[in-house]
Length: 251
Image (cartoon, rainbow, N blue to C red; front, side, top):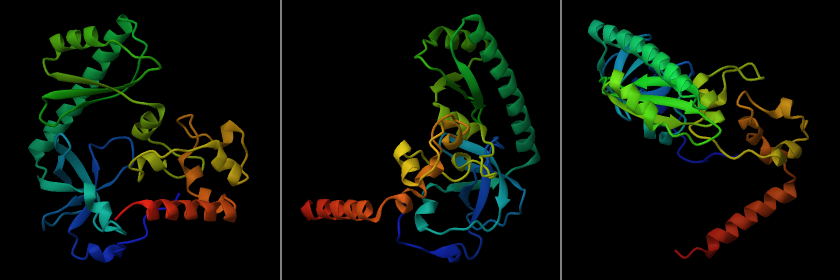
């Protein structure tokens, strides 16, 4: 697994603290995202409101000088809206309380209807107009009756989102066998294919218990050293193949 090799800017791209690292909604995972400060001076631990994918999001500043190695890292940077006030803090605390009660209601109703689903998390949007329910299931579930019953008690928009084992682990967070926070809950933005062949190339044990992560799937880090474990001839052949394909493409 190799990354891009260009546009290295080092931390000099953040000379005046124009970007800080924030943690969204104090979730269990340790993911830190970049936030453009718009020139506003912030302090570590300060609560702020940032633009999210679905409206405003509550966040906390965790680092004032995040390491920025590539300019493309800032592609998904959030934009600071303003520093959070005491009213925002009270609103967020109330929001967390409502999420806990909503989770309990979803769990109770799903159990009554005997739906084969495992609830992972419920999230309320900052404006309180929408709930998102994250769950896992081995089968496709007809949750229309569940949503309609929930809407009677919680008259807001409710979105059910089924996720896989890897996404579940990403949301829950935890420590890997290396003793560090899970890659998926810190810096990985997406999941790449991981195969048993990668373990063979590195002469690792093929015992599933030793090469599987908390999600029960092959560990993502098997792909990190895959290229180094592959025979040089195989790497060269792959490079030649990629070069031939690029030459065949008309300019």
